[in-house]
View 1 (cartoon, rainbow, N blue to C red):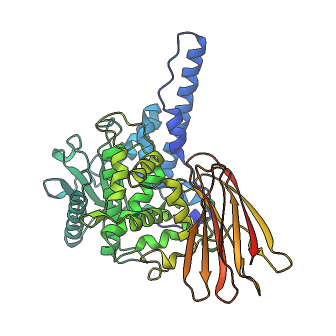
View 2: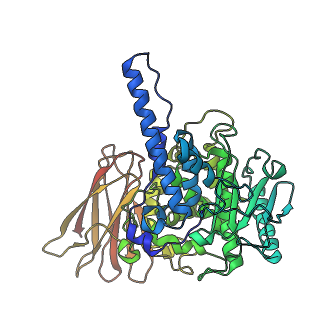
View 3: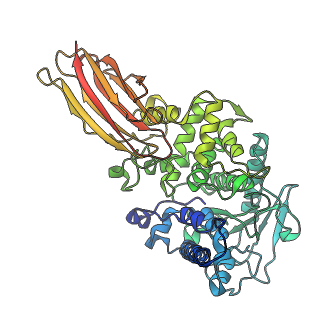
Length: 517
């Protein structure tokens, strides 16, 4: 779901991520023989699953009642909050189970309590309007709380048809057929007053289980007018929301149970691919690895937070996919192929597929002759000077990622300096050093500790504004060096970016500066 950041979100800071605990709690129990130990283990796992499911229910209730600003839930995507609830609800009992199922109901399905503010319900006597193509149907009402004008419904219908057509032409799998709700198996979309609780759109499923593998069918909802937006006109906001949410339905058709950061960052990236003139996703950059916590007020912004973190940072980290697709620009029907290839690598509909999001990324990059560590260090370096790397950086005023290594000061009588950083997986640290009178060259030595995951980039910033980047070749121990220009008259500064492009372990990296010549 697309949402906008609020004061509550920024105050909350850290966001809860239920998905990981659900994965552990709901996993199939290990094979064990009969006896007290296995019974105790099964009971413990059931208790853990119930606890995780209750947490998912509480988070979903907070999200759909608009009370999320008081908690960390505001940082989560409603589509994925409800996805987590869908996966967890079988562990709930009694009223909790009933509440969970009520939150997943369609606007045309009567809830247990029609006055419950958690449920979007058109009403028993609603005059339901419907317009369909061969692939989907749009439903709306023109009276009552969720009323939509015929003109806006027509715009929404054409927008969904356009988005569906682009994704199909680009080779993406269509959303899976549903179980016959609303009279047939076509994918259903609904218009309703959902911005009342801070939502712009959502996709979710009311299925009893996956259709095949871990793929689920989905239905989606969009606001009935987008009239309350202070930052975009209603049509533009509708367009990027449909592009975003429809892509969630596409993701569900491959693997609805995959990592949240991947689902959210790729959906946000696709907004700009389909509606390049809108550029709303540029406003999220301050929350991802391009951001500066001091500037955005969001503590998880910046290159020190792992790329695969699932909270509001995932919205800002769509820029990772923009970087990759600008470096690998092959496309189909105007849409880059790389994102589609990653989701195809995660497909669970043809065979069991335990591939994780990062494994899928590595598989796709390897097929293209590169790797996650190589691309990640280049991405981290690009974020230090986005204006001469990204296509729209100047026009859209991309922020510059902050330096997280202390700047080094060299002089003729002090030509050496050392800086050290502890890097979590998929994080980076950058530091700079400025030439002094009489300096000519700078030798940069790095010790990355891990030659598999560690990488280093050295960027020379010329006095006229141009940049030149060199990647440091290292030996099997992760050690290497490079010498770059360092004359005060022609170089304004040299930046060194240390990156951990691995997917699991933290590492300690060191850079030593030495003025020479």
